[in-house]
Image (tube, rainbow, N blue to C red):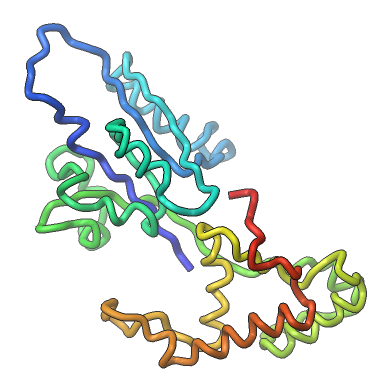
Length: 256
């Protein structure tokens, strides 16, 4: 699963009351974000360090107040609280799952004509972020999901992962892990208490051939009609057979 993120510029902060300043003030920006990325090997700095250096080249006196989102429940609680307090950020960067609800004219400032190198984007990549023809957000690099296998555990239980393994193969492995470690280690984490990490669990739907939506139609979900019940039966089997922690429903990924 590829998760895109949005860079949403909140216009009503940029355009406050229509008074004119007689003296030039340093640029001050509040930047609400979901986390930095270490690109030291490639750029010699983190993603934000690199971006701030580029900003300073044009605006040496610019001040950026960096605020990290509270992702404890995976919701938009930080953004919602800042809006309620009248302290909305100038720039909001987050996954599209959360930020898309703010990609409306009431919140976001149109970016057309404001970005000097906008032509570096493929126009087709920007279309999803237009509303009424106006560009209200920018896509930034996301990530892809995959399954990581602990080969030390596999060797310890005497299991060789097949090249194209099936759900039944996975269940065979899960039983071996249970029998070997007796609740000290598990076949999979299966944490379900954090909304921000539920996509890791929901990746299982594709393994059963279940479709979230019909191609091009996002008006309603097709999970039920494409076999979604099989996935929930699988989840229940993992819990009932003791292949995952018994408190999986309330576990959270504390690294997010």
